[in-house]
Amino acid sequence: MFYAIMSEDVPNSLDKRKGARTDHLARLNQLKDAGRLLLAGPHPATDSEDPGTAGFTGSLIVAEFDSLDDARSWADADPYVAAGVYAKVEVKPFKRVLP
Image (cartoon, rainbow, N blue to C red):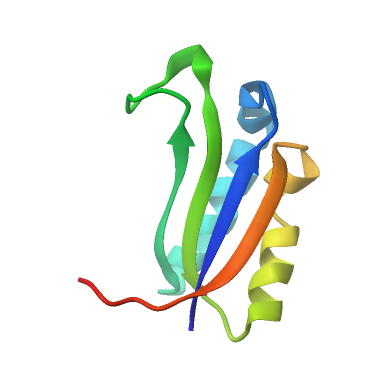
């Protein structure tokens, strides 16, 4: 089943994101390579593809896991969590309807 991992950044998270980005993306690429990643990306702090120094306010990942507990465990081990990027992480089942 798919699960949505919705994260909210701490204020001024950009430097923390930059420091952990390589490891964060490596884990996402593992999901992608396994055919389990539906989508992933950050929420820009401004209405722009590149928010510059405004940074980001959070992230959304939708991926396939065996259970809600597995999805939560994966989310808890995110390098962004360890780096203090996220103030809050919520994991919910996701039912894909379209496309």
